[in-house]
Length: 200
Image (cartoon, rainbow, N blue to C red; front, side, top):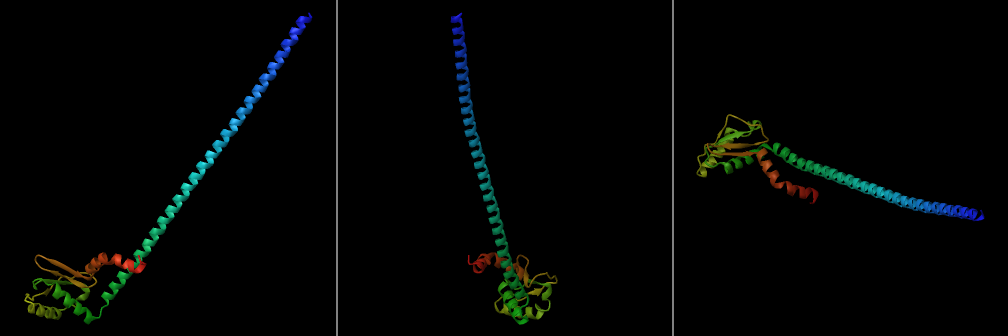
């Protein structure tokens, strides 16, 4: 009986040892899993923080880029308004020229523009009292001295414009209205004016 009891005790002891070994192993495994979980959790947290930082940086860059574009647009608008004001002032100055100065200007423009000297002169509505038959008579006289027909005549139709005239023949039409001349000058000079105004 004593041998059986000893064997029994031995089995129980081995079972206890195995149990403790299994429990210790399970604890180690649980600790390892817990540690891996913590590491993984930290990695996920770091990735989330990194992603959030990247998104925040991207958003910041986008906001700055939009703000710069808006600032550039506002600056360009302001510059364009200043250039518009320059040309508006020139238009006002042209519209308010002294009658003698204006007549002399038109006289010279007609002489320079006339090709054959028998064209029709279409004038601005507001110039009926300035570009008169008397003025055309003086121009025609000067054209005859140049060997041209000297038969410019006022057209019955008039046009709305700042000043100047359109010279019309059968084949050619020369637009010498201030509106057309200003448009041409604006295209040619806008960059130069911008350079003067903004020292670009």
